[in-house]
Image 1 (cartoon, one colour):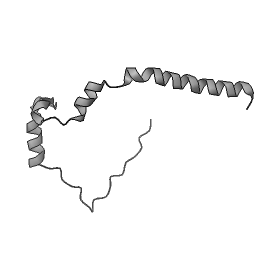
Image 2 (tube, one colour; image 1 turned 30 degrees about the vertical axis):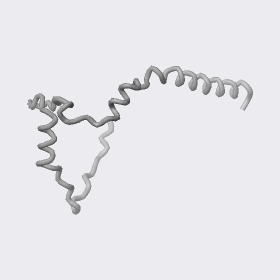
Image 3 (tube, helix red, strand yellow; image 1 turned 90 degrees about the vertical axis):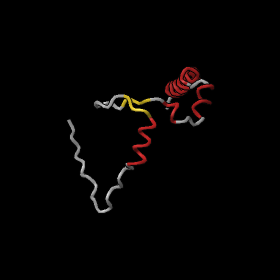
Amino acid sequence: MNRASLIFCIGALAASLAAAVLAFPLAAMPADALARAAKPQPAEALGSVDVGNGFGLVPVNTLMDYYISHPPKAAAASAAAPHIHFGGC
């Protein structure tokens, strides 16, 4: 490597690091929001979720009750994995 290439590489790395250091505070979550996100919330506080497809807004409690009453079915052990074809362009 010649000297100009080495200076360019070091400069590019320094500029990238400086950009990351300057941009991190803009992208970081505020401390109070992070503290609230770390605490579990009761289901009643979550409100309703729009599930779409004509169902509209459904309360989270109803979704949890349905999930508990109708757990997902386990995949059959003898079932072969589906063959996925690459479609391409």
